[in-house]
Each structure stands twice: as C-alpha cells, then as structure tokens.
Amino acid sequence: MEKQNNFGSGETAVAEVDKKNNKKKSTGKWKKIVDPLIFIGPHLLFFLVFFIIPFFFGIFISFTKWDLMSDIEFVGFQNFAQIWDIKGWINSTNVFADKFFSGLKYTLYYTVVMVPLIVIVPLIFALAIHKLSHGKKFVQAVLYIPSLLSVATVALTWRWLLDLDNGVINNFFFKDNPINFVKDYAWQSIFALTLWSGVGGNLIIFMAGLSGIPQSYYEAADIDGANGWVKFWKITLPEMSFQLLFTTVMGTIGAFNVFGQPYMFGTPTGQKVLMQYIQEYAFGSSVSMAGMASAMSVSLGLIISVFSVIQFRLMRVKD
Amino acid sequence: MKKNSFFKPSNLILFIILLIICIMWLFPLYYILMSALRTDDSFRSLTFDEAFGFMLFPKDATLETFKAVWADNTRAPVGQWFMNSLIVAAASTILEVLVASMAAFGYSRLDFPGRKVIFGFLMFTMMIPGVVNLIPQYKIVSMLGLKNNLLALILPGLAGVGNIFLIRQFFYSIPKDYDEAAKIDGASSLRVFYQILLPQLVPVLVVVGLNTFLGSWNDLLWPIIIIEDTSKRTLTAGLSAINGVYDRNYASKMAATVISVIPVVIIFLVAQNFLLQGISLSSGLKD
Image (cartoon, rainbow over all chains, first blue to last red; front, top):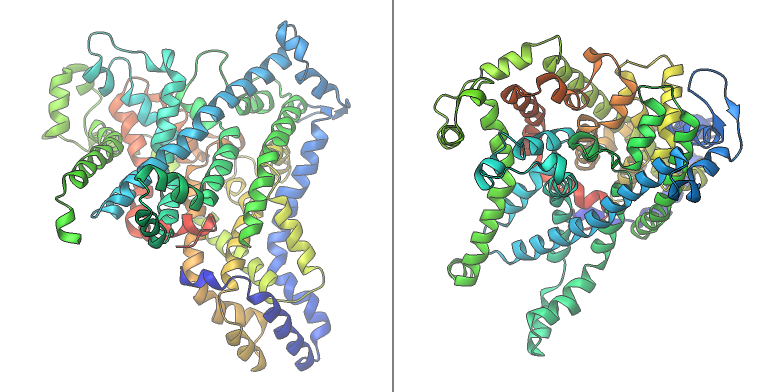
C-alpha cells in the first residue's frame, strides 16, 4: 500500500484546516460540538454500553456472589481468596482452586506449546517459499485458506480425519492398531489442527517482512563470504524482529484466550482450559456462579494484560 | 535467471517439498467434501478400500446428503442457521464499516475539545482483555431484552476500537486539499465525509468489512452463550452441537461442515488480494 507511507504528516494539517474553518464560519461555535458528535457519537454509545460499563461491572461482579438473577451479594476478596488458594489446590480440598489452577495449567500448556509452533513453522515456510522462483502466491494462498475457517469447522474436520473407526488417518496408517486420537492424543491433535489453521496469517506477515529486506544486505554479506546460516542469523532475523515480536505477542494473547479448540475437539476429563471453566461457572447447566467466574476472568485478564501492554506499545510505534 | 533457475536441482526439490505441503494443507478440505458427497449409509456398507477409491474417482457422488441436511429443520436446522449467520455477518459488516469510518473521520478530520484525550483513551482501552467483559455483557444484553435475538450478535461488536484506529491511519494518507476546498465551497462535514472522503477509503473499508464478516461468521463463544433457541443459532454455534445430532451419520455431519466453509471460500476467491493486504494493514506492516 503506497498510501500508508504518508502516515503522521496529517496531524498539523488537520489543525490548520480547522483554524481556517473557524474564521470562515460564523455558526462555528455550536457546530463544533454537534458536528463531531454526529460522527463519533454512535461509536461512543456502543463503546459505553458494550465495553466501558461491562468492564467496570465485570470487575465489580468478581467481588460478589451472584447467580446472574437474584440480588447481588458483595463478598469482597472472597472469590479471589478461594480461587488463588494454592494450599487448597495442592491438597485438593478446594474445588474452586482446583478448577482454576487446573484450567490455568492447561491454558499455559497450550500457550507454551502453541506460540513457538505458530511462529517458527510459518517462518520456516516463509523462508522456503521466498526462495521459490515460481508459484509464491499460489503456495501462500493455499496455506492461508484454512485460517479463514471457524474453530468449529476446523475441529469437526479434524475429528473426522482422526476418527477411530472411519477416519482416513487410522485407515491409512494405523489399520491394524487404530489410534484413539480424541482419547489418547487430544492435545497433540489440537496442536496439529491449530497449526493447520493458524499458519497462514503469520506466513503472510513473514513473507511481507522478507520481501522488505534490501537485497543489497545479502550481496554485501556475500562479498564478505558469509554462508547462508550466518546471513540468516545476522541479517534475516534482526530485520524481521518487529514481525517476530508482533506474531509472538498476538499469538500469546490469542493462546491465553483459547476456548474453541478444546471445547470443540474435546479433551480428557479434567483437562479443560480456563475459559471453559469460566464459561461453565457463569453459563453452565447448573446454577450460575457469576462472581466466581468473574474472579477467574479478572485473574486471566490480568495475566493477558501484561502482553496487551506490549501489543499496545507496538501499535503506538506504528501510529 | 528466471526461466532456467526453476530446473536447478535445489529449486526443484524445494518446489516438490512445498507441493507436498500444499497437498497436505488442502487434503482435509478435499476429504470433508468427498465425505459429504456420499450417503450416510455408504459409510456402513463400503470397505475402506472402496471408500478410498471413491475419494479418487467419486463416480457415485450425490448431493442428496446436502439437500437432506439443508432441509432438516428440526434437530439441526442448518439452512436456518446459515441464513442467521448470513444476516448477522452482513449486518455487522455494514454497521461496523459505517460506525467505524464515521468515528475515524471525527478523530482525524474534525477539531473539537477533548479530541486527543478521547482518542487516546480509546487506544488505551485496547489493552483491556475482552475476557473480563463476557459475563457482564451477557447480563446487559439480557437486560436490554436482546437475549435470543440476532441483534445481540450484531451490536456489541460495534464497540470495537481497532478498526477506527486502522481507518484513521488511512485518513492521513488522503491530502487535506480535497475536503478543504469543499468546505470553503460550503459543503457540510457530512457531505465532505460521504461524497469526498468515503470513495477514497474504499480499500481500507473493504479490509475492515472482510475482517468483520469473517470474525462474525466464525464467532463461537458469544453466540453459544447468548443464543439458546436452536432456531436462532448461527451456523458456527450450531455446528458445536452437531456431533450430538448426527453422531455416526458421517456424511450428514460433513455436509453441514462443508456448508459452513462455502461462504468463506467464496470470499477467499473473490477478495483474496484484499484479505492478504488486510493482514499487512492490521499488523501495521508496509507492503
């Protein structure tokens, strides 16, 4: 996009235009308030109702005992004390701490495995595709298609591929001893399907990054007699540092929020991620424990916000 | 260099490896399509070798399963779900493009007290993780009487800030001369916005629109929470229960899955370049 290169030059121009307008228009005073409201008002209304109010309300709920229906009862830090009860978790005497830490554990497990995979694999693919003399766009497009699908679609597709009795993988590779992927290799399968559907987006970011590295850097390195490995570490990786940081941070935030993959594919008993427990506690079939679920949400939110701050910094750099 | 290098052995090996990867990436989609073109009964009667033969040469392919799945309006009304998804995604897209571009216009082209502060605050809230909002949003949407209403799937999305940020950046690439001239001629802000600036924003608005459509089409958690009526579900939310409905009727299950893929693939074929641009745009990278 050519046009993007002009960013930032506009700020002062805006002020100038508006100054001129003020001189020209006599009705400027009230127009200055009403006019902008027409434009930013609709969004601000939705923003208030569906973001600001829920945010403060959500933090409040985490300090209450509430079933979403009857009266709210303020209980202070009781919910947090319950879910962060490390002793109760270790001795399995506190069911809330048990669920919270177990959920956190599997969320972390997913994050720690998935984030490196979803950065390194697309990077390798991008390096390989970049070397192609023909068909770059085609390969890129093919690998990108699955990332447009919903988690539900992806999970159903993979459950069918890996089906115990009729799945093509079992029939083709493990005919004699079919593998029960959903039961015995649920997480590995989830990693595979997430990789399948997640490679495309990061691949395109890396491809754009690679084509942005000046060829002259490599030519200079060639003159110095650097081999491919050295060029990769000394030129490619440093030049791609923004892309690598961006994909890692975004991947981490996404991974902490994981819900759909384990929910749809299924995991062994007791191996749910935190978002699943939050959903169950707040909206499950039994009486809602919205306060407890909110305390879990706020706790998870605090962890995620560490990474959101980095994301925010990255965006500010680009603004 | 171009023509000959393709036949260099190293390039050829690389090409073959990537070709294999491409086949691996497309195979699952091909497989679910081939499964959906069979009948539920054929999964009980055919041996795997026969079924595998079908995958290579689908000579008995039938659309009957698709028709049956689409027409079923009791247990899993896939046709109804599809229409719900289409309505929700289309409405979300149109409204988001409108609301976000208007707000972006306000924050980049109009001068009013507190402009910088408000926009700075909006940016700041992007750091707040959405997970905290889930439960209170449920309550608020219920209190507004929108539970089990498709509006519940459309309106909350309009609170987003990311797209305003994206469009606002794009505004700065449009020279001020245009709207300045129009304003001197006495055009109102509204006129300047939709007659002069909106046409020039089309590339970024297409990106915003596509992302909104896909995001809405693929959303899972919020629809399964706020929609309880089976008939009001979106397709993605509906699919989450399809294992229970079709159980071992594999062809039917896969037909429903394939139906959920169709609009996405159409979008991909039509707007491929915009989608790829969109990734670079939203990640703030230059092409």
